[in-house]
Image (cartoon, rainbow, N blue to C red; front, top):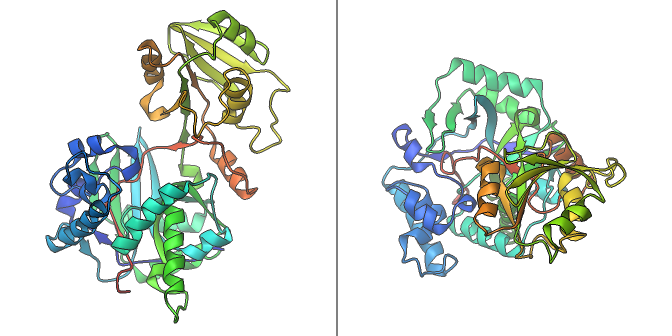
Amino acid sequence: MVKIKPFCGIRPPAEYAAEVASRPYDVLNSAEARQEATERSLLHIIKAEIDFDPTVDEHSPEVYDKAVENFRLWKERGWLRQDEEEHYYIYAQTMDGRTQYGIAMCCHFEDYLSGAIKRHELTRTDKEEDRMKHVRNQKANIEPVFFTYPDNADIDAIVDSVVSNTAPEYDFTAPDGFRHQFWVIRDAEKNRRITELFAAVPALYVADGHHRTAAAARVGQECMKNNPSHRGDEEYCYFLAVTFPASQLRIIDYNRVVRDLNGLTKEEFLARLAESFTVEKKGSEIYKPSALHNFSMYLDGEWYSLTAKAGTYDDNDPIGVLDVTVLSNLVLDRILGIKDLRTSKRIDFVGGIRGLGELKRRVDSGEMKVAFALYPVSMKQLIDIADTGNIMPPKTTWFEPKLRSGVVIHSFDGK
């Protein structure tokens, strides 16, 4: 059972929404953010290092201070305004003709600590600390986390009634071609009913934003410890999420490129692969994996199909069934000698949004020697892993489209 609440969102006036809203902090580097940021862009708040000389460390105190100053200025200038009443909000994203409808809400940090908000990835302490500083300094969740929940027909009906009968407050297409729409749920009874319905939802699942979720929960704990009169319903107990029904989400592939063949010749490498895979040469045309346990490989100007042989994987194990596990065990570790995906400098990861042509490009350029494309993880696999308390291997899931930051913000300053 989860505890959620509506909130007084801080958000841009409709005429500024498309400009204020930005890509999330972790999908572009500082140089890209400098190039992308317009005058009102939220990038000045979530990546405030772009307002300094490029030699300034993005984790320096003055950068965090600048982020706070910019957040204040954006509100003073009217580029961000706070709603006077608490609402839930509907945030829709459209990609390739498919639309997913999420509810922007506040979730309670204790649900994360208790496991009612379930994760499927490990987090790094340094990244948590960075996000904690942003939340703590701003007294706000500037960027939402991306959650999912088991489908619920009653919640779907409320969302449909709002979307079908109300014009969106925002409706814009971002530079990447994805459409973003946003509705405010102003009906008090609908807001009350959403809270009631989610109280019966058994769990929420972190889809994207594990570090932001962990950081928000830790800030909530800090605030609790610093308040002798803590009750558990203070605004600092809550953090911002946009939560989507599981059936509407799609996970896209997350692929691998490797710098060398661990001292093997091409022929030796292919022979080693044939011990665990049925290897088929596919020629120069891009080959995309066709099913679970089928992989695409690009090597020396040619594409190959690799199909794992029966007995080399365990479909009864929620981790063993994953193709990232199969590839890691049978190829990256056993043949190429890559033991730790988190620390090895010999491997890199490419989100499927870039297409398999990006794998070919990086190998053809000579930067990498071989590339592997994987069949995407399913939402069922993700939920099974979270439900069993397991953790996915690194770089397993890639969700697209990403939530735009700045569409709505949650503040706990003075509340």
